[in-house]
Image 1 (cartoon, one colour):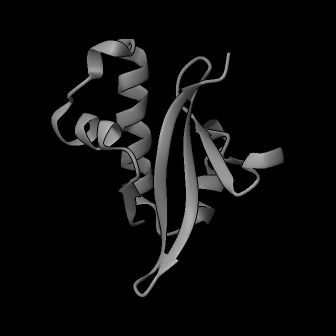
Image 2: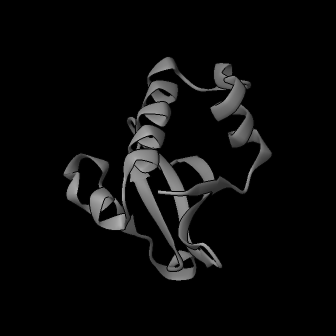
Length: 98
């Protein structure tokens, strides 16, 4: 599945592992594992099929966003987008939901 990063911070973490020290090693490992799943997914159905990701729609003023479980209370926040090439995920942020 195609994806883009909204945050330069997350793009740098993904491409250069820059800023990895501000998170625990388990969170960074989980981030890379989830990004590999997203990259290998055909579409969102593949993300829903993996129950361990807890891919779910957020509520309230964030109802246009979804999240995927990383490690502990950390979640990867994403938005579903469409452009001329079709659907893709916009990776918004990595947040601690504690």
